[in-house]
Image 1 (cartoon, rainbow, N blue to C red):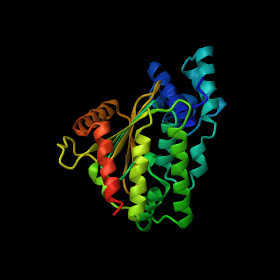
Image 2 (image 1 turned 135 degrees about the vertical axis):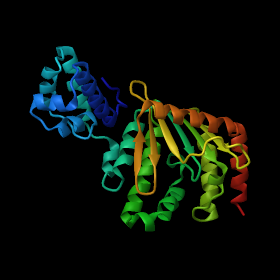
Image 3 (image 1 turned 180 degrees about the vertical axis):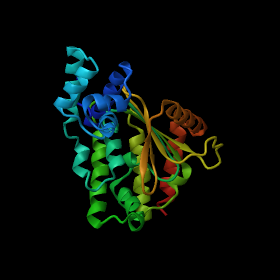
Image 4 (image 1 turned 45 degrees about the vertical axis):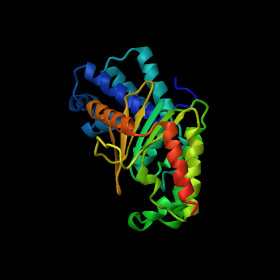
Length: 287
């Protein structure tokens, strides 16, 4: 059974993953299983990909076809029950992209989060004013309304409270490019406050903030990414573009991102040196 911190998003993915594995153990293709069940192949595919929630009757029918015993069937029903709960992030689903709300759901149960950001301070570490300026910077392109900006800022602050201050917080490892400390969003006072906030957050025992300086050797040419690790679920990587976002779930590709992060981190300043640099940037923003 999931802990109190359990995420419905993770449960939905686990349920789909379990059903796929049980089907494969019976040497059934998705199309063959669909025919036996009297369903369309897309229904089986969508259930396994956590795009569609199965009903209790669906689980029973699949259990019979896949020859699942009583204990395993009870486990599936437990996952279904927990997957049907509502996560806090769903309060913002009308104003946030679908893939981003999925990230919030996964993040709620991650044990380790590793984030590389070459352009801006990551959302988890942003102040309210900085977050607003970052969102406003893309408003004309992404066509975000005034209420949409407000909702996204609220969601970002809510996310911070729930991730950074939860009872058993995940380990957060962030590497920032030095340029992210120099690129202005809003008035200089906004940037100064952001630098000071970074320093404060970096002192939390479960947070590591390091800076890759502009004169450092940069061994990997990649944009921003977030690598999430879980106790009982495969790692995933989240990639975000201007108009879309997607998840990397292929284990070999995920391992490549893990190696990339290790390379970038190895070339960055250590935590104490990074704090000194951030403090210097904060002083520059006082001018």
